[in-house]
Amino acid sequence: MKDNQIELKELNLEDLNNKDGIVDYYDGDVAFIDNIRNLTNVAPIYAKMNFIILCTKGRIQFNINDEPLMLTEQQVLLSAPFVILDNYLFSPDFECKILCLSDDLIHAMLGDQVNVWNLSVHNQRTNIIKLPEEDQQQLVYYYELIKFKVNHPQRRNSTFILQTILQAMLLDMLPLLEDKENNVEETPVSHGKTIFDNFLSLLSEKKVKHLPVDAYASELNITPKYLTMLCTKYSGRPASDWITQYTKEDIRYNLMHTRLSIKEISSKLGFPNISFFGSYVRRLFGVSPTQLRNQIAKD
Image 1 (cartoon, rainbow, N blue to C red):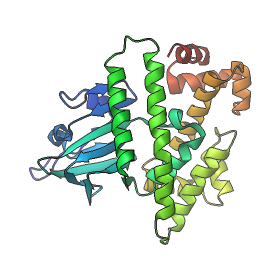
Image 2: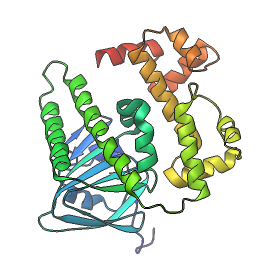
Image 3: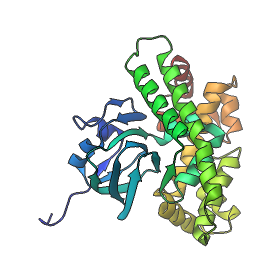
């Protein structure tokens, strides 16, 4: 590597946890960071997770994908995965709360409303929302309550309660996303972006999501290669990843919230047989469908 080149560090949730002094809490799907100054030690970074930054005091400026961005008090930044962050500058009084979330958790928490998040956050890769004072207070309360629960894990049903608080926080944020989308002045939207949005909507609506990319491309009247290119351009992920993500959450939901047998779930989700379904689940989750159902019940 040449001397004038700066190494770009890829960071996912697990990587963050392995960096001393950065993460205040980590459980595989969620991480809390109270002091963004710690992240300056690993800049520039390629963030491979969703994150929410709530500015509670002062201001911060940094680049996301080479575009300058400023976050000030009573603003919250929502970012999709696969963005590059660099050149942090913050006021001496800057304070913030940061939540890093996996795609799995966001899909599991938002369920059939996940498209509001996906279409809004993935639209520009980042989304800054000006918060009314009471909404900022509410988000701070959620954050502090979540921290309290993780610091008292010995309490009964602590994991379930923590997930419920996270779910409530994300659901409370959806109206803010919808309001911003409704209040944005109409601007020309590219044909490619419209196709990407239509793909996510189509994927969300399908009862059987485990289909090849070709099937979705055919419904959108484009080639599979073009669909994959558009998904990568507007979300950093190919079409096949989105199909897998939505299918994964359908599997999790049916194992967790229905009394259907494994065979019935396999048929409902469009798998050719229970053996294929079992192999698919093992590949995604590392355990069999029965073990996953039992695991989810324990959590």
